[in-house]
Image 1 (tube, rainbow, N blue to C red):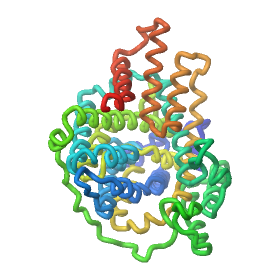
Image 2: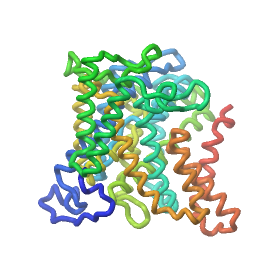
Image 3: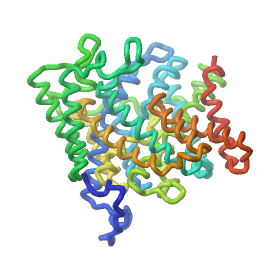
Image 4: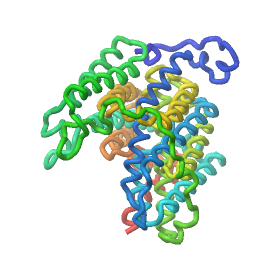
Length: 481
């Protein structure tokens, strides 16, 4: 793997080779153009599944009128918005972070918010949420909240996301599945790794780990592409088919075979189909406010945790644990949230899969430019995006999860006042399948421990506010019932 991922080595900043290099600080961050391109490719192939998955999630829900969103239109708009906001992140924030429709948030919109109103009303709430976050960023409050969080909790956030990422990889590949009784989750099917797709994942993961250990350049990207090729060959021979209730040994997300139609004209008919005020009349002001608040917290802290984790993996954090150009990163993320609602694809947010690109050497916004352009091309080449199955793409998530996990050594585990909140931050993310739950649990516990220890002065004033908001977040069920 590229030596830039070696935590024991410090890259020496190079001399800028031109205006493009100076603007994006390619040499200054110890990177090269080839590394940035590889990183952008790796990030795209790791998160390109959202072009297929987002339409399945949003298309699976129905609004109060029983209407469903057309999946083809959702796919096209998903790729369009992801491409534009990721390019904006690269050009304006100059950070190796890609954005797309947020998983979890899209499910919230599809199965909780939309049934209470129309799709246009639900997407209007997403636009409102994005605008509110943008105002909070422009006033400096979001950065103040971010700076109020102790550095060990920020580190724990990155570690927790690493574990969460690895779990997503294992679950999506079918290595970890829900049990029918006890235990609630288990290894494969009835405790066994069965089927060709699982075998392809295991071979791909082991091959990628070997490449990483041998520090082969482009290890993650080579692993994804190589495993996909292997999957195509296996499917051509064994005819495994898609995973279903009758075929639990099938491929997840995509069946790896070359499509008959490679290029297609995108249908962008969903752009602009949102209503900002309709939700207040349909669902009532209390329910609407709680929906906006839930969306706000999910986007707010998921992004903060993601950008810290990616910056941590890239070695770009300062002494306070902040990535460079934090304000610009948060502005782009806020605009992306509103843009997702305006295009009827749910809130767009920063993707932790960007760490796959960082693992390939990406350190600047150039990688995001590459990823963004590929998303725009995906509008036309959507059939090719559907070639990569989860069993090929998720090998990268497991490897990147390991790389992010290594930062756990910097937390002082002998100091229980920070170790316990850090522990809860780390474990709640994978155990509850939510970054926000982990951050919230850690913050609430941190404030409580400092309070009972009589160290109120060590609690930043904003931490009180954040902890109180997270208590409301965790209690939103009883409040809405």
